[in-house]
Length: 587
Image (cartoon, rainbow, N blue to C red; front, side, top):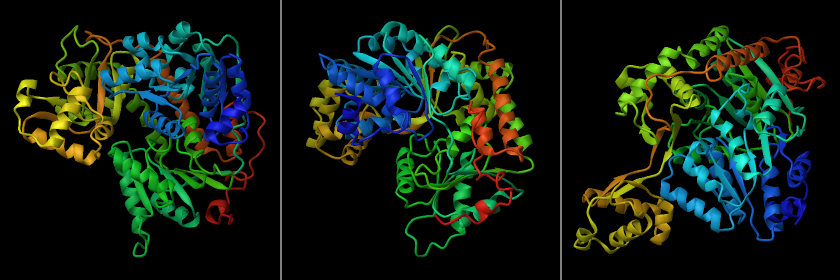
């Protein structure tokens, strides 16, 4: 099977996008490869196609790609998409029980699985490292590869463990990113242990995108004005959850709703239940909702081609983040607008983020010790312990400021003292309270009896500890619906036969090491990263203040493209006359 055969057979395409075939050929030749492709440039096919080719051409029919990505929602989406194409794929992420992880490993070891998606934090688990070397891995794909560089805008120390896995597996690695400066490009290859430099890149230029900075003292009025002038699907990015709802309500209050079944605007953030987030995302993708007001939790992995407008109501922390989020506009090649709002006080507000994101080291240590006290972890104990935690409640109980506490948890994660995972969907848990002998004498309904049998069969430790359960799988075992299974579990809990903890959205804290007497934040974790953060904020402020240079040229130069042509479409190129955004051409 050739790469083109795999592309057509599995994905239904007859030709590759620019640079895809060259990247795939490099990987198939066994070369370590770094691919710089813009958002929406088809990065996933660059590791999916060569994996399928290697497996098809292997004498034993073996071939598994280890995909490392920090985006749990994206890995779930890609696993579902691959399975819909009859390609076996699985994922391991925080919140899965040991039993569920064991099943995934066994499936990948003994079954014809082709893709195993894992979060970078899994690489810090000794148990994971023991199992992963047993798998028939043919390549490693590193998504969001800029996270491995301390000079990148989203450095994650757990990415540094990838080099250790490479030493054991001896397979080619494909690193992928849509945002990397020349300095980060070099650092990625060094940190991943490339045998030689090997970079493929396409131009990040998007001629159909019109970049605009709108300076205003009234962002709400400008938001409504631009939404009225520019038709089509839109995204509005803000920095806090409360504002997502406030602006969605503001937009809807300006629109006639009597003849409309669907709201014009909806809001989205990571704190919403998964069912609501999925429903709102789907409605927006299908055009039933026009405007999505959201935090940066929205948009990763979403390839909606006809987004005509992306507005940043608040200034992002870096040009990398802005370029990636704004780049969700106009993927169909038609004209689209990327607008950044700037108010007079925004410079001061942005500079405050340095202190919010890098609180004093003494405050970071205080959060660590209070967290250990809160979770009743004694000095020298707690290794490998994992806890669900409500951070807002923790802050309220311990009289801590919320914003800097979140930052402290991230710094402690980067330093290796804890592994903090922000809110995610935690599967329901069940523990059977009675022993087996007592269960035989119960007078349950036939359905409840079958359900208890299924629970005992699937989850061996269910009599001693609450076990994470998979409702869809149980419903399949019972030839029933998730609703019926859930209702029966609730009924059994009311009868004190089981303890049932429904699915919930929680944050998780894992302690890879025992509680320490003091916290030390190395320069790589604190001082150096703080300096990088300050510089990236300054670059973002300079972009916003620019009135003299083509905005597209500025951004492309930041990413190493020094000879990019004038875009002719940004507000600077057209002389700040605002006509492009206030009177957009019909298209």
